[in-house]
Amino acid sequence: MLSDTIAAISTAVGESGIAVIRVSGPEAIASVEKVFRSKTKLTEADSHTVHYGFIIDPEKGEKLEEVLVSLFRAPRSFTTEDVVEISTHGGIISVKRVMDLLLEQRDIRLAEPGEFTKRAFLNGRIDLSQAEAVIDLIRSKSDRAFSVALKQVEGALSRKIGELRHTLVETLAHIEVNIDYPEHDVESMTTEFIKQKCSLVMQGIDSLLKTASQGKILREGITTAIVGRPNVGKSSLLNALARENKAIVTDIPGTTRDVIEEFVTINNIPLKLLDTAGIRETIDVVEKIGVERSKAAVDEADLILLVLNNAEELHEDEILLLKQLSGRPVIVILNKIDLPQQLDRSEVNRYFPEEAIVELSAKTEEGLDHLEGAISQLFFGGELESGDLTYVSNVRHIALLKRAKQSLQDAYEAADAGIPIDIMQIDVRLAWEQLGEVVGDSAPDALIDQIFSQFCLGK
Ligand code: GDP
Ligand code: ZN
View 1 (spheres, rainbow, N blue to C red):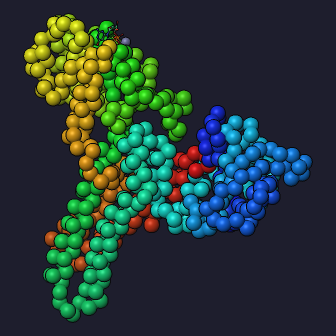
View 2 (cartoon, rainbow, N blue to C red):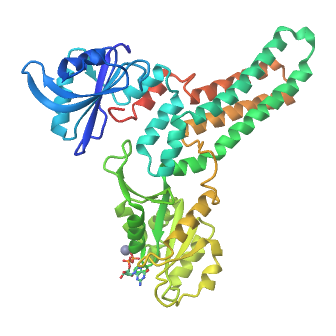
């Protein structure tokens, strides 16, 4: 099944400086050689070399493109197969012409989405959690999320899972010995041993799970609603954030068609602002706060930025809003500090602590950095910059970790209840398998197909 040769355009299709076509498989080098003219013969070239030349239509003898061809010989390539990467000028026409010509070669077919990464996985170069991290890398919304995904591609999560599984294998071996040689009468010692090992692994799982909420935030962004009365400066704030932090408009594949979400990153934390229509709807929400619909939008948010006008006295609607929002994850923004203060801050303090209040000017951008600090404080206890970047952020991984923990809990309780150890063995083995599924050790084919189908073409 893996013995054929595949090709795809690996860069985003559209206008760009260069575009890359990737070819992988046993015929990769020979097939490209047929349409490539340069000083050196590809078939004789060393691995990890780059060659300048032209793509030629072999039938018409016509020069199609000036290209650079990079050569990676098996197994030292992304897929572990022979890989050739052709860098062409970026125009869609020129890339397509080269691609079409390659596909006319009988031994090359168009790759399916994610097929290159899938080959890397099936050939044992990366495990499943690493493959999934490749998807995260492609979709990262912030530098931070990118670093986290990169770490995972490098195998940080795999290593931690590996350590936990190793402990479980030791435990299983210990149980096995005990079952095979019961006459040694070490039953009670074994029960203690199993309990000890189970709690050790459960602790390990717990510390991974603890990173999950941060991981999710880094991956998906903090769903953020900006609320406040008309003219307090919500749009100005949004623009200031976007300007400072290069708002990215992302079209997320896999979600509802045409849904555009707007992201701004603050201190490397991605905020997912509701889609533009939604923002307008939630923004001038204060008079309608009683209206169920606007309330729902606020309820849904992970973070609410309540904007007040520092240069005016609090409006009764705003007092109502402060009341209604207390206890929620809110940052109160006192905007327009470039103007003389009119607002009574102690009134705000009745509902929100000092740490949740930020003074700034959306106009002069003074104090904007305090908002960034307040957000990191609220979501990461200010600790975002520490840690080793091993975050569990994938829902599939989280579910498996929780199940593995439950299995170990069952084993632990069985041990306590004096249930025979061959029963405990079942739970410990189950936990071992569930952890294995994270890295794809015991993952069913359907799951693997589903994961790789999320990739874009050419990855
Ligand atoms: P929104 O209705 O809440 O979205 O408010 P806008 O962002 O449209 O701002 C309303 C008015 O307040 C505009 O004239 C802004 O230029 C002005 N404004 C917004 N932020 C500030 C600020 O920090 N200082 C001053 N002086 N004016 C501001
Ligand atoms: Zn506005």
